[in-house]
Length: 92
Image 1: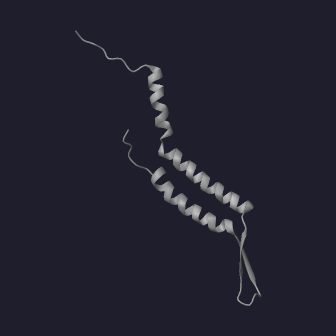
Image 2: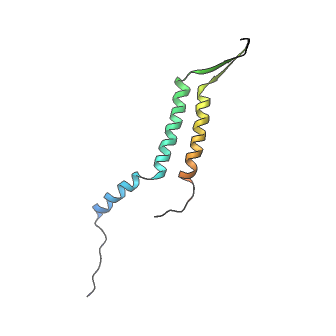
């Protein structure tokens, strides 16, 4: 006598897929990258400027602080995006 195995019921399958979607690496990497660049945006709008004065005080150079924050956000984006979004073999 042969028995046929049935697929799991639909509600059980839906419950298992939701945590798998929340733990996707790409989603968390995208959220981290977006928050880095939102920090750059708020620094550009509300942040102070860096003012450099020469030794005699004759000339000053003003650089927005968002330039420095954007540089580090760029470094963080590159460091995070390469392993998160790079091509790799899935274990699924």
